[in-house]
Length: 192
Ligand SMILES: C[S@@+](CC[C@H](N)C(=O)[O-])C[C@H]1O[C@@H](n2cnc3c(N)ncnc32)[C@H](O)[C@@H]1O
Image (cartoon, rainbow, N blue to C red):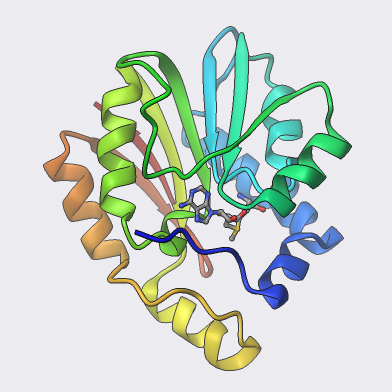
C-alpha cells in the first residue's frame, strides 16, 4: 500500500509552537500519568515527525532511542534540529529491520489514523515489543478527524481507522490496555 505524506496544511500545523506546547504540556504528562517510563529502556517512536517527541522522550533517559517516519521532509527537520538522536525514513507498516522482542517501549503520538494499513503496524509492534513491554499510543476519534478535514482541510487519507476498531484489533493482537479520554485525543497504555 502506498504510504501517504501529510498534506501541506497539516505539515505546517505539525511544525508550529502550538504543536510543541501540546506535546510537552499535555500529551507527555498524560502518558506519564499512564505510566510512561523510559530510563534504561530501548525506545522506538513511530511517526516521530519533526523530532520534538525525540527530544521529550530522551529527557527520560532511555538506553536507546530510534524515531522513524515515512516522510523525508519531517526526518530532515528532525535530523537538523536534533543531530544527537537516531532517525530513520521508514514506513511503519514494515518494521522488519527490528528483531522480535527487541524494544521495551514503543510510542505513537497520533499516527495510526494516517496509515491505511494501521492493523499491520499494530501486528508489527506486537512482534517487536519485548514480553512485558509497553506501547503508549494516542489517537483522535474518527469523527474528530472528519471534523478537522471539513473545517481546516487537513486532508487525512480515507481509512477505516476508528477507536472502536483500534481497541478491537489491540485486543485481538493480545494487548490489554488502560486509557485516558480527553476531548481531542484518547491516550492508551497497552501491554502484552
Ligand atoms: C499527525 S503527524 C504526528 C507527528 C508527530 N508524532 C507529532 O506528534 O508531532 C503524523 C506523522 O505520521 C507520519 N506517518 C504517516 N504515515 C506513516 C507511515 N506509514 N509510517 C511512518 N510514519 C508515518 C507522518 O509523516 C507524520 O509525521
